Length: 257
Image (cartoon, rainbow, N blue to C red; front, side, top):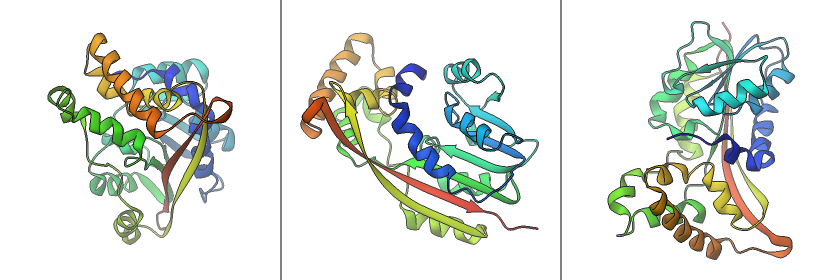
């Protein structure tokens, strides 16, 4: 299942804003070793590099396509092809930063404590995850995939919501860290153009479903999904669609030695 960097970056301003909000809450002055987990095309990694220009920064992603664009656009940064669920660096980090990536992984009760072990004393894990899985944009997709017409091929791709509630993460992480900052924000995104919400999901949630179908099937599935989205997110004035999108933020710091 390949990523499409061009599709993903169609809404780069909207996708970048949560990363900047996350960055503003990192309580570190001069981290020396930073890892960007699930770096994608590297736009956020570049922000980290600008913010801490003396740090050793590595962007890590499992997509060759995304890393190819990252290397092209930001050749001075180190990029590494790797599975972030198996992240185990030879040199532990002062900061593990992950923007819109960890929701693709399951077993957060194991994943988060494992990531904390890859931090130096006083290190920070900063995570932002989409938390929009009950919204019409996602629920319509799941309902269609589970309909009689598509369930045999697409039903297995429907996952339980991968992101838990705030209380769950607080209970998991607070015994393991010195400081914890956790919050949720809903961004009311104004998207322009025809089928704007469809274009958004093409770059993320819709990808695995289309990848499981041939060209004819994917066009039919997408057209049915587009009709459902138009009912849920009608186009308003100035060809604009208001698309609320919730995101969960977690910033934790380990104890100093």
